[in-house]
Image (cartoon, rainbow, N blue to C red):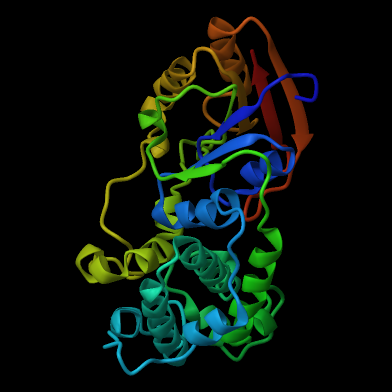
Length: 318
C-alpha cells in the first residue's frame, strides 16, 4: 500500500487496535470500529485518545476500596472456580466498580485496557471459552503454559499494562475516533477501508470472538451482567446470537455486501488462505467491483492450529 494515496482510514473490525494504531502512527485520519463494547474501549484508549494519561494518583484510587461505594460481588458470586481464584474475583469486582466511578472516558478506557490485558495474561490459552481454572491451579508437571504469569498478582499486571498504555498515547494531526457499530451500519466515506473479519475454516467452523472473550464484554457491562449470563453454560457465557460471521452458508454474501458498501474506497482485506471463502473466490469477488486486485502472501502459524500450510493473505483492491 506504499504507493497508494489515502488520508482517511476505516478499520472496520478493529479488534486489538494494532492496525488502527499503525495507521495513526503513519499520520492517517483513523476511525477504529468494533462491534464488541470491550474492544471499543481499546479504540477509545489508544486511537481516539490524544493526550489523556492515567496518573499515579488515578492508579492508587482505582486499586483501593472506598467507603462511599456500595460494592457488589457480581464476579465473585457468579464465576467462582471458573476463570480466576476467589481472591482475584473479589479484586476484580472492586476494580471494575471503581472504573465505573471515573468521570473522564479516556481514563476509563485506559483502565479498561489494562484490565483486559491483565485478565488475558492470567488465562490458559488467553481465552474464556472453557471452565478450565484447574489447568492453572493443578499441582502437576507442566510442558506448556506460563504458571509464573498466571500466578502474578492482578495488581502487578494492571500497573504494567497501564504503563504500556500510557506510553502509547499520542496525537497526530487529525482527530481520530473510535466507534462501536456493526460494520454494516457504517455509512461514511473513507479513502481506505481495512477489513479483517472473523475467520471461517474450510471445515465451516467459525471464530466467535463474543464467545471467546465474553468475560471481558461482561466487565464493561457490569451493572447488567447478571441479567445477561447464560446460566446453562458451564463457563457462564453471555446470552446472545452467534455472530453472522460464523455462518458458513452466508459468508460469501456477507463479503459481497461489505465490498459493495464502500464503492469508492480502496479495500484492504486480510484473510487466511485456508478459509471460506477461498483465496480464489475472494479475489474473483473483488475483481467484480475493482479494476485492480493485488495479493500479498505470508506464511503464518496460528496459535492452536495444526494447519501448517496456512498463509496470511492481504488483498488490496482499488
